[in-house]
Length: 173
Image (cartoon, rainbow, N blue to C red):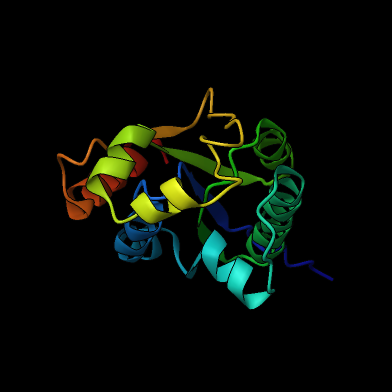
């Protein structure tokens, strides 16, 4: 009897500060990734927070949620489906777990200065009025060795950044 081994999907973990363009880049790159790698699910940390009513933003709960996102992505990719997740999740422990436990893991860091996000984006209200903001009230653990870095200084459109990501994926994967 021949055992049919399911090919594992890839996980494209897009991380960076809130307002850096992660979700928009993920959505724009989906078509390319799906064409190149097959069935692909895009999801954001905001989507998962909404679906599961995750409404706490302190460091302890953010870390717990980030690990939940990792487990979710592993479960989906283990079934042969690619996942593009856009999430803040700026914790070294989480990314280390991903690298050790998710077979086809690609870490994409959207590098953006907080001051530029506040000045150029609609996130001014979030950064100026809320508590427990990653990078502002909670120390962010920025990726040290991501597979891909996209610099978003707001001089390029999301379409340009997505094309840049697609080119980098084409070269590395």
